Length: 214
Image (cartoon, rainbow, N blue to C red; front, side, top):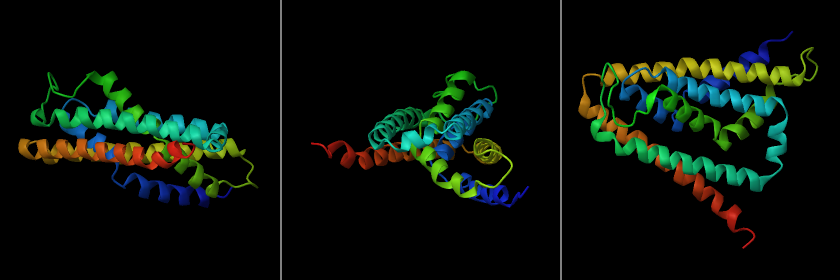
């Protein structure tokens, strides 16, 4: 079996994981809030597992064939990012490291952090389309493994890479900002603004689609 395509996809996946975006903003905010960032990182990766399942079962192809549905999913994802960005930015004054994670603005418990993380990655249509655009290039039609199995393996590779990268990002944010509350406040505010900006950009992108039939 040729493992070169899997190694090639791993390189692409690592590059994408290292590119700052909404996931990074959420991960940094989770690291600063205190408590364990593990639920937030687990939520992000669970969202990618869901996208992997969608693509592996062929639902992604059906979804891509319906531009209007993708547009509405983009709007839902944008509205979610706007809400998450406002929630994060609103608690910037109370940002900082607390060992026990108690009574921190923006914290909703481990399960709440998990759900927020899953929503951040799982409701992102751009990530779904990225899976559909990148993964097929690394699928081997002549491989003894069925295409869905190869797709699932590629998705799991991406999940493992994101676990490592996002965990390091959260830990680095905590260690670097532990003794700098003012810096933690500014970074939290910036994280919220970044999520707001990405949400607004997603909405703006869908304006032509929504007004096409008007």
